[in-house]
Length: 261
Image 1 (cartoon, helix red, strand yellow):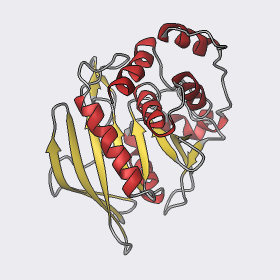
Image 2 (cartoon, helix red, strand yellow):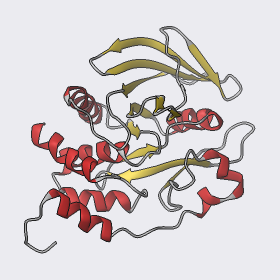
Image 3 (cartoon, one colour):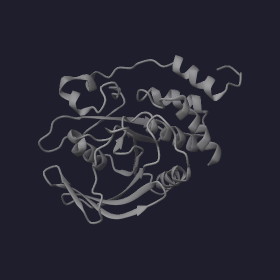
Image 4 (cartoon, rainbow, N blue to C red):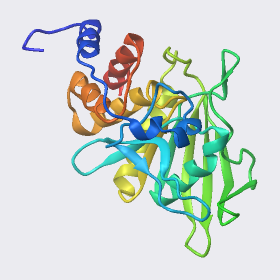
């Protein structure tokens, strides 16, 4: 973009012109078609998350991507689970040692289903998967202003159990932006604390498709760590997953958050 100072809208338009489609043949395959929430949002073959083998399943596909934060760290960005992929989602969480899930969509938006309920909502409620060998237990739920923070315990066979925090932000309209930012700041603080105190744990971001709202949060998180310019970050994200940050409004919201953090 040379040395000319562009407005945020001009930056956005320049980014749009520079977008190029990548290969996503695995997500397009017949056997995986029903595992995609949206047929036009698919992981690139070279950056997709590959599921580890598990009992009664040889399919390694999930609509999820590894997104680089820096040379040493990446996060997972994925679609909201559909009924056919809830077990895949939790198997990915377990095998990739996810310690924090950020969910940035509601279950229903505009009379459309945007996400399944994929975790136990009530305290002490359990969810069993993988032939009842994988168990997710709700240990504590805390209601914030526009979010719900849930402490989940995950057990698999005789391995040591793990604690995962699930942050469900409910104040973000599809293709729009939140009216308030307090809970967004709270999530980012939790994400940074998790990264600093438990570097062995991976972070996971998702909205409905896993590109718009999740892309915004991924871009903000990366900037807080690397201090890179926002256009460079968004371009880098789009090389790992299609359509990351979908609208001009969402792009401007990235600046709004980082300027107030």
